[in-house]
Image 1 (cartoon, one colour):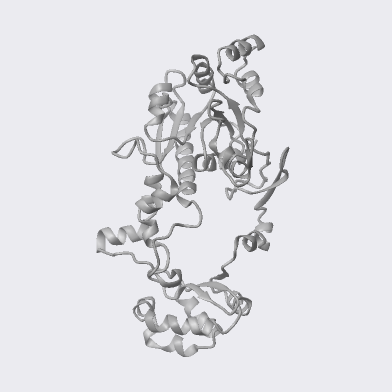
Image 2 (cartoon, rainbow, N blue to C red; image 1 turned 45 degrees about the vertical axis):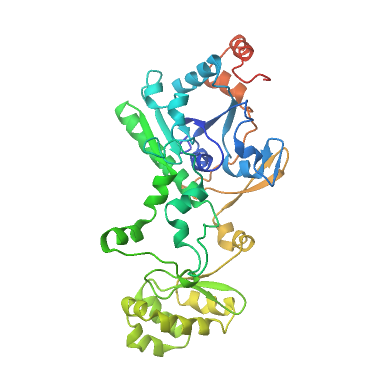
Length: 400
């Protein structure tokens, strides 16, 4: 069996953060049943431009591989009845909605425990289900600003800058599925389910990590650094070579000693001003300009070859195309392919979650409602007559 083949999750997920989290569970064999609202056309990720047509988009394909979809109008009594039958036969309900919405939709543990006492109800929201901001909408960009990330990012004289990727969303997805699996373990052990209240805000604030600890306990004020330099380790930053950029990091004293040999400046290694982490940080104003001058004299390849041979932490600053063509990406099987009726052979990025020696199998993201018959018949055991009755009552949407 696949690692999570015995796990069934009913998912009211949309856009990026929620689907990103459950994607990693789906790749490990969990059955993710997406409940999509026919009144709104399902997951809004289906319509994200620029590569979108009808209900297909490359954005949606990125986050919904290996999942199943049922189109279900939970605002109708019959649609709600189908949802509750799904809960009865599931391990978890997973959602990424605004913090006050799970209670309104009656998808919290208190709402569902009479149906399935073991059910784990995991909510990933912007601000969580409690607190003064619980009813506010939130997106990655907003939270990068609110939690201090943007103030820390960019050049010292430049404007506050967001990350080039939606890291709050993606980290929030990882935290949500970690919480869900933790809850699932406890529910199987104890026979009692629970709520998992996860928020993007909590995730982003907690990821301030040691700068936050330094500030609260020692009054440290984080500042932006030139060329993305590490706040305390010198040298550890981006350097401009003749034909591009590289990152060089001396996170241990031995790396500094190796670096001065590679750049043919042993005098810097012998200079007492640069003899330790603390001294190099104190004298960064004289050391870093000299290192920048030296590294600018050769190409990226001319520096990376001897630095790599000396086992100095280093690497090129690639663009996206270069990153995807790295030999190591191919060796690690990080580019996967699925077949799609609109896109043909579609390339996607594999989950970094590795469990055991077997490679996951990959299936394209589902069309809205594509698996309805399989779910209604195979999971719920509905007869054709029951399905027809529910359809007539609008359970699957007015035009189903």
